[in-house]
Image 1 (cartoon, rainbow, N blue to C red):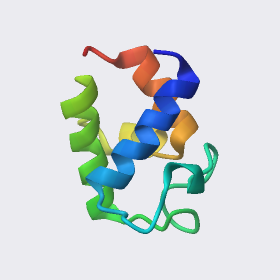
Image 2: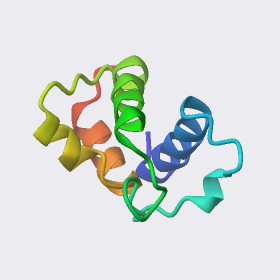
Image 3: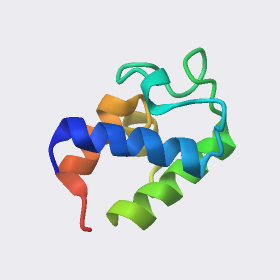
Length: 87
């Protein structure tokens, strides 16, 4: 899947999976931080995103340090999926 298409799909999945009904994919910038000041997601949301990566892309993240590197923004997630997906 092309990186741009993957990013759009990922945005839609995040909105649906985290029930962010007040957002549309175009509201999320590719380089916007997911946690903290950006989208303001929290630790529960990070667990949900890890489940999403596993279910949709066959990616298992067991190390919290790895998770912090992957779940920075849409760009880092898409790059990681591109390199590690099994589905």
